[in-house]
Amino acid sequence: MSAPNAQPLAPARVDFDGERPVSRAFGDVYYDADGPAEVVRVFLAPAAFESRTADPAGRFTVGELGFGTGLNFVVAARLARSRLHFISVERYPLTVDDVARSLAPWTTAFPLARDLVAHYPPLVPGWHRRLFDEGRIQLSVYFGDVRDALAELAGQQRRGVDAWLLDGFAPRRNAAMWRRELFGAMARLSARRASVTTFTAAGDVRRDLASSGFEVHRVDQRPHKRHTTAGVFAGRGRDFVPPTGAVVLGAGLAGTATARALADKGIAAAIADDGEGIAAGASGIPAAVLRPRLSHVASTLASFRIHAFGFAAQRCRGLPGVRTSGALQLPGPDNDPDKLGRIAQVTPPAIAEYLDPGAASDRAGRVIREPVLFFPDGLTVDVRRLSEALCHHRGIEITAASPEHPLSVVRATGFNIDGFDTLEVTGLAGQMDRFGCTYPPLLPIVGDGTIVPAAGSVWAGATYEYRPWTTRDATSANAQRLQRVFGSAPGRSIERFRGIRAVTSDRLPVIGLDGGSWFNLGHGSHGTTTAILGAEIVASAIAGEVTPVTIDLLELVRPGRFRERQERRPNPFKTP
Image (cartoon, rainbow, N blue to C red; front, top):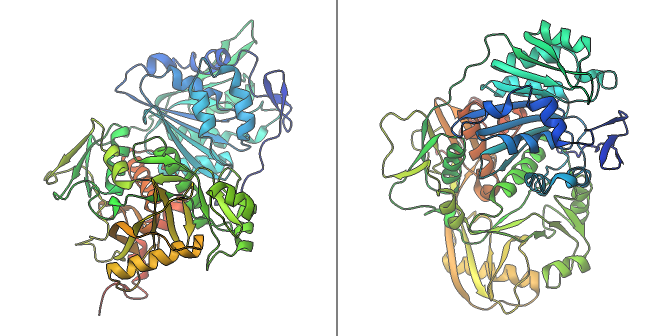
């Protein structure tokens, strides 16, 4: 299995025959003129989709080969009443503009089409998770080769797929997608009596499905076309039952996000709080910036950061305490202007744009003297308000102590890791000050620390304090930071926030299962992105679902990595 990276994919080349999108590479249409009606006629009706997804308390998993314009997803989400996890694969993803044009005729009847366009993933390889309808509709789309996607599912997805939709281009035009070994992989991922539907009635396809364990038959589609194919899986099938409840230790952003992710998947979550309240620690920060940390070199780490930002930005946008603002990144010691330019060259423009000083000044409403990166989807976050909002779900309970015999325990306890001495986690203090400011910038500015506008004022702060500072020293340093950016001294500090962030020895979070315990902690200054992604990773794994990232990215953050390193050297955070 090839490892995805952050390098953008070449988009599909699409023409339009009237309103019908047509693939140049395959010389075939993505769907017929009646669009949604064709989706129902060919894929959903033969699978009895509406009746099988009628129970609001139920869960249903779709596996699709060929995401295309997303029309199948939009129609299926509209018809389903149960929780729906729609897993799809696309080797040649469309641009967001082509998706928007393709779905434009159907947006009135299917409002989700607009949401899909608004939150369409960047064209980078790997899994992309998007949530709709308050988490009831979950989309997991894999951009890349179908063989890699099915291998990912084999390694992560424990819940069986209930319905397969095979919607690649015709076998004679796209033979790579219609191989018998892929049907065998589908069979191994199927739930009992999983359905399979496809537009083709080619004999080879029907025979290969049958040899893989599916009982198939032709469906008369006249007068639209002669036949399509439908069937059911006749094998034993996967029978995973997720737990009914879990306990989350910790009431900061990582804990509340984890509880919410579990509740959205139908798993009741109890947040065990020691009495200090929601976001009482570092998660109480009133002015944080949710933006990507990017690299000019494609790597698993770069891919992890892009996927973390993409998911977190979509998950948090519109929630209380979150404001869509965009953000600017100034050059700094580790990112000179040339490096920022190289980052922009390898990053989809939907994520980051390279702006000259004039354009940057227009964005900021203040004079910016150097080229910058602009993040159009950057968010300004009051983390305490966001954490409180994440708890507002009927499936979440806040308790003083955890139950004696919980089904699953997730530790989201920051740098408090008592009993888990192999984890290389410690606490580092940081401070932000709010200074009076007649003309605050129009959007947050990051680089040498963080600058966040507020009403008639501006927050400024350092990422970490690597040596002990007094509150006065930290305030002075923050004032100097503002002066370096804007060229003039700020007003007096009228408010401050100090917190201790949990950081790891490799500056990567701790996410995953180890020794019977789940972890989502150690996020440091990246918490607004990685804590949200970590919550979805942990909740997905507990629910038996593929996580929102590929297996190689999970390897970066798994808890056991520290124990293995300590076989070669000691824990750097433990005194001899």
